[in-house]
Structure formats: C-alpha cells, structure tokens
Length: 241
Image 1 (cartoon, rainbow, N blue to C red):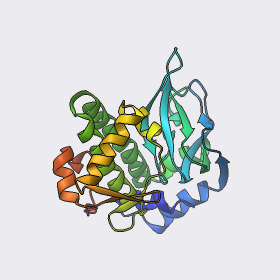
Image 2: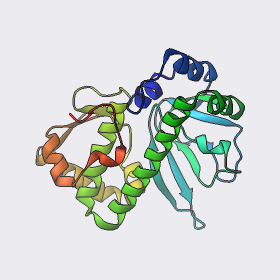
Image 3: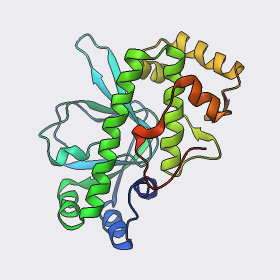
C-alpha cells in the first residue's frame, strides 16, 4: 500500500522495521477519485493527509478569470498535504490527472508519528523540503529556460522521481499526462508541446511506448536541458541511469 513512499524515503534514511510498521499501520484507509475530480479544494481544512498509492495528481491554482495553473505533479509515493497538521487551510487545490487511489492518514495519527518516531518524522519532512526545491526549480524553468529545455528538464526530473519511488523500468517511466496537462504546468500551448516532443524524438532524446516515456540518451538529455539532480536531494542512492 505504501511501498512507493517507503522506497522514496529510503533515499534519505534507512528506516527500521518498527518505523515502517508505524507508517503502514497509520495508512489503512483507501479512497478513489476519477480523472478530473478535485481531491482537495483551496480553502478546505482536511482532517486527513492523502498519500497517492496509484495514479497521478497535480497541485493547481484557479485564477479569478477561470484559468488554471499547475504547480506540481504528484506521483505514487507523494503526500499531498502533510502540512495540514500545522496550517489552517489549503492555499491551493489538488486534482486527479488520472484515476487515483489514495491512502488517508488522520492528522491525529500523523501527529502521533511526529511525537514518537523522530527519524521517520525527519524523513517525512525531508520529502516536503524536496517538494519545495522542485517548485523552486520549476520557477527557474518558467523564467529562464527556453521551451524545449523546460520540457526536457521536467522529463528528466520525472524519471528520477519515478526511480526514487521504485516505479521505473530501465530508462522509462509511466507518463499518463495529456499534452494539455503538460502545457498547463509548463506555460505552453498544446501545439508547442507537440512540436517540442516531436523534435526531441527526431533528435534521439526520447521515445514513447504507449504511455511510457523512454529517455534514450540520458547524458545528452541532461546536457540539452541543463538538468542537475542536486535539487532532488537523494542522499543514500545514486538514482541516475
């Protein structure tokens, strides 16, 4: 149920069986959402923390004129809202990009983990700090990287994040996103996304196999996008291909 999360946390700390059991015992309630459904809406005060088991979701802001902007992709093993144990309400919304299965952990159970398992607590907050580092890198991409490099950069990131959660096969990972979803995150039109992807395929950088993205030449892809994985802060393992 929580294996992708445990796999991800192992990049920061070697958790004991007791720590793993505490997290697993807290994560016993599952709930499902259809593609396009809101999991949490801005202004809500959730009483549970949501951990993605299966599927992809996104963080987004809804603007006054109805436009939406995606601020992060959430993969299996990602916690949507661990900060609700401290903050009063959600300042953004979370939507399912595919059919999503979530595990719910009550705020009370999470606070019990915080009080009794300090190393596990550090690992969980490490994951939130990585989320913040990813957001900073996305801001750099939006302000300073050309469209081609911006998209290639997020593909590199998603490969390593998927590897960290134990979700990859060789140099490939599941990418169940539409061009529209990518465009909302990258600030690009569907037409531009399609043009950039087709050019990267011609250049031998990537390929698609159904809904899996294969990075054909990792070093060339890194050089093309200016990707440096240090902001992901994977400390215990080298997860690069």
